[in-house]
Length: 113
Image (cartoon, rainbow, N blue to C red; front, side):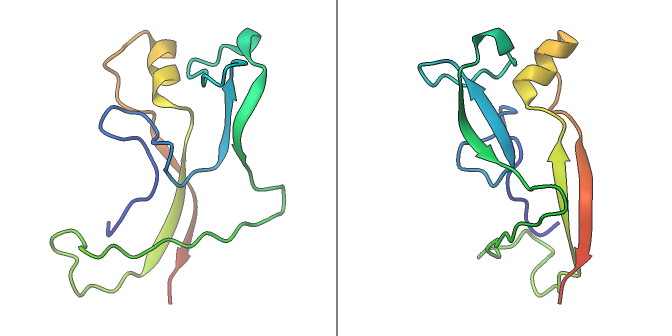
């Protein structure tokens, strides 16, 4: 893998600056409800979705310092993955605060020029 954009950080949380799709739910004061407390939800502070049969162009920079072993390599494909839910909710649902992040699911793969 040459680079990864988005996904959980070392604490299992999705950084607010990550490239991502989906939406967040929040309390009136803007606190994001990571455990899906639907009865407390009054706001959607973040939302980015792709409509059915739609598409979204996403441009990602090539890293200036690629990982060891990838220097000079030609990238042949790009994949798009999604997590099933955010890590705090996943851990709460499993009643295991030490559980890793939920698994990624590949949505699409394409060959690069």
